[in-house]
Image (cartoon, rainbow, N blue to C red; front, side, top):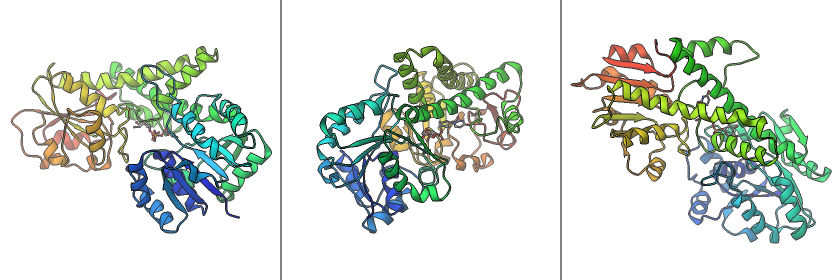
Length: 437
Ligand code: UDX
């Protein structure tokens, strides 16, 4: 018999997981507390921008394998329940806010049937799976728990789910392992490595992976700071060290640094949890990783200030990019918006352009000016900051912009634009970590 799955929480992770599990042939029900989201998903649309996901979702809803509801009672028949709710940073603290995780477990417990498996996918502090297992042992004793971290990247969510680098499952029983092997059989058959661990190892794999990625980015940004001081070029340096196969060239793009709903809050929650466990010293370096990352935003604002001779007051500044990275409309902890807001607070007239993220940006920073047409956004700019590397910004032809009365300046905080092109059109060009480029 085909396994029946439920997915609790339908954000970037849950909506993608639900659609992709249905794509593998399972019967899937997604549970979401927000009725507006359920209505959108049930109609075959996706309430955020994720390339390729609308097609997978609509196809599986039409095939009758996938549906969404606000009612937890409707998951009662499912064999496996995937917990995909958010674990944001607590307000005013570094630790993760687990209220959605424990809230969903509490709501789910009365509907679990004997033999069901509850599988956590959300990123949680190590020890959470054991706590959940303890809680469920009291209210739903015939139920198993497993932890199966998710490594998907926004913008590549469907591909990362259907063709992951690896599957990691933390289990406490053979039965849980077997059920998960059954779910992921189509991927295991493709040759995807399937690693079986205990709960704490599975939980730690996720935060360790994100900490490593964040550390690589901050490492190269620290080198960019040294390049600034020494008159060297970070792009050439990164390329040169990346040829060493022991180093490799991914996650070595220097620039404005990392943001989004995962890396920043995950390293902070990891430090907080390590502190609780008495292992604070082991992760002290992550404090530095976080600081280096945040300094890139300050450096960018300072370069902008220098380009405008020390004052933003009354100056027209255009920011290219609002999303935390290209191919996403996610503005959570967006470095681009942090810089835009800082310049506005210092008196600049800031216009923001982004191909997909303007509506989300306007909700978080309602006082910035948002313009949908890139040519219009650039028309009056004395200073342009390239802060999110959407491919279409590389296709801009500065020679086509109308001539300006004043000297115009470009700061490329993602190191992706062509200095020759912009200089030839009369602009000054400056990139982070490349004072001589
Ligand atoms: C990340 C992890 O990659 C993923 O495995 C995990 O499941 C969730 O967190 P995501 O947040 O979607 O995914 O973004 P990612 O593509 O990893 O980029 C994170 C940030 O780092 C972005 O702001 C990006 O602009 C920045 N970045 C990335 C750099 O500044 N330089 C790089 O070389 C790479």
